[in-house]
Image 1 (spheres, rainbow, N blue to C red):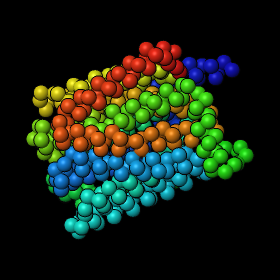
Image 2 (image 1 turned 90 degrees about the vertical axis):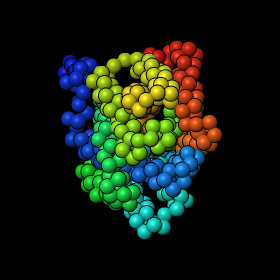
Image 3 (image 1 turned 45 degrees about the horizontal axis):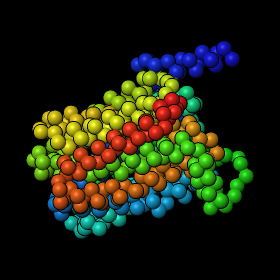
Length: 415
């Protein structure tokens, strides 16, 4: 008992020497390496697609419309993805999803290389990616919660976010250069060996068994998960936070090509730098949270991060120069990642193992509402300008977190 208490105290102790604690777990190292490669494919794909769409149409609305395909795929199947995550071997789900993403990327690359690509093709590809993510993300998040212990979970979530930040820092400007050197099709084809490596890393993970509870129908298990959520106010608030981030904090990424092309006139290289600034902040924010250990009052950190995220979006929207915009985006990245990591950790630690996949799938399902944020935002950006649109969203996001802090004071003490 004394040794267990000492071990937990060591894991809970903040400090930079505990920053990489979760990577001592061999299985998590493979997940982390695969996640690093996955983040690179995401950066390459997002920048290449956004640049291609804006080059073809010159419309912010078209950017939002294509991005909405991802949300539609999530809305359609993410709840089913959560049930699947609680019923089958999660490693198999992850391997299948990465193979499918590789195939979608290959098809898009061929269409672009042969000059057959149309905007609706990109929309279909985006929707297909959403369907795949609907199964991938609940399985991935719940598998991490099974591989590492509760005291290490925040650290593991933070390090997963560090992988995303590192690729934003390095991959985004590289993607901007690659777009100019090898073209959009070349960037798509470059993702294929990365998907092969992701599958390779996943095959090193154990075939964890699903929970041994008595099985019912898929519909009954889905209803059981929804009832579980409805009965827990804390879980409901965490899901409201997720939805607020989807609707108000994420659309700015869709409009970075507009800032690069029309606001600052920096071209593809400037687009890469804007995305890289987010990566710098995201990496710093994630490393900071990882160094905190298993600290108390995670709810308070989530509220502060949410307020900072709304404020930094306002700063970015009206930054008077490109350099100040980069600084503001670094703040956006830092606050956004702290918010994301803390929210995800609280969701995973405040639900039971038997329903974790379904609860996480509801959080993922809420990401499917991104069209509600991106499509109207695209229309507003075309009419009133991207800066005003992002400023309104940042202000509304700050109000949501202020309302939670004032209306539910106990939330700040959530662990």
